[in-house]
Amino acid sequence: MFYRGKFADGGDGREMGAKRQRVVDQGPSFYGTSPGPSFMYNASPYPYVNPSPPFPVVRIRGLPFDCTETDVAEFFHGLDIVDILFVHNSGKFTGEAFCVLGYPLQVDFALQRNRQNLGRRYVEVFRSKRQEYYKAIAKEVSDTRGSPHRRVQRAKSYDEGKDSAEHTGVLRLRGLPFSAGKDDIMEFFKDFVLSEEAIHITMNSEGRPTGEAFVEFGNAEDSKAAMVKDRMTLGSRYIELFPSSQGELEEAVSRGR
Image (tube, rainbow, N blue to C red; front, side, top):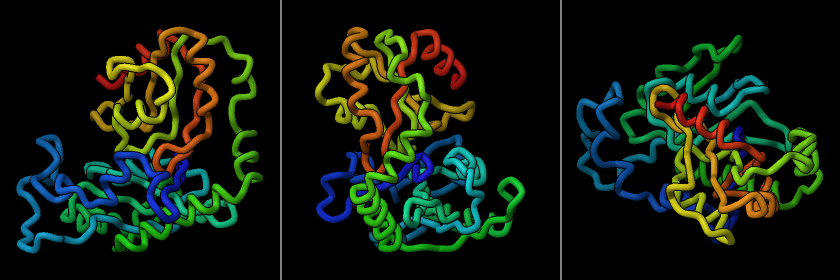
């Protein structure tokens, strides 16, 4: 995507998911009180009088080329991650990414991770701007639309047995934006009848999204038909779909409790 894959609107914004769109629209929830009691730095809201505080985004450079969104989220452990956007050039990961945080004060804490190690490499963390983040999103979307060879290459990395796998009515989604909610997933599968209760966004042990979710369809035929959405975009991300099972769903959900 952009680790988890990773791209968004190149112009009119119609390709962006509802959650990502709310980020772009600068919803008030970004800059109000702190996200919740579990956040280690949330003693008080950011003390801005200006009604338009800085957009909370940093740029990261020097990431390992096998880096994942989970790795970046762990690197910024304790901060609220809204989105992670990996930067590509001609379909290849550049080792750079943008990370959108919960609110502006968190940028200062993110900058304290500058030149700390992620794996065996130290990474650099810089202040960034809304415009730079949007420009990167637009480029990723443009590159994805215009490069079928890139999509084919990525498809080869999928499980080879996916097409022949047995369907039980449950699909696993991988590559979701961390900000994605059940409404975004329902919109992604808008051609199918789903309820919120049928969607399970998995969390890690700290209650943060993992970038994966499980969806229970009405029957195996529907889940098989829904595979047509494999590698399509939700917001700026292209989503991987895998046939799953009720047992795998329950195990994943229990790990996040």
